[in-house]
Length: 213
Image (cartoon, rainbow, N blue to C red; front, side, top):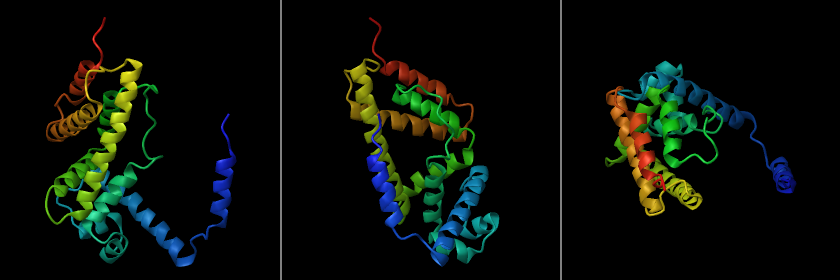
């Protein structure tokens, strides 16, 4: 049975915490409204050859409003991508609880095919992270890859312990390989939608499974 006492304590702490009021609350709501609209715009058109002024026009706000809430184009792109992947925005996964890491990536690839603009936005951020003078993109990319590799390696270890994945391979190396394969195949798909993205990931999944005895 789940212990509800920590949740109740947290709820009490939330009640004691000052709530945003007036202009501050309106500012939060306005920023969220802009983000929601920006996600729709980027999902449809991506981030290629886009300026803050062009985005402001598409979103339906002034250029000064956009810079007030996000500061720069790069900061806006990071915020849009992170918000688009926030809990509640993603469709429910159609995978069993013991899905392998590659199966998780295959499901992600399936979902991403419905929003090519956001996939292109992600690729734009990663490309910018490799260049000097893009601190927001670099922080986003390095943090994301580090967290993703760590989370993936944990899943790999659990799969190895349960016998669903080969135990003669290093979990951290496997995690890095899966992330690299997923991102690389996603780039190929952006350039050519006939690239066998999901098929290649399925092959990797089979190669990482233990040999039949």
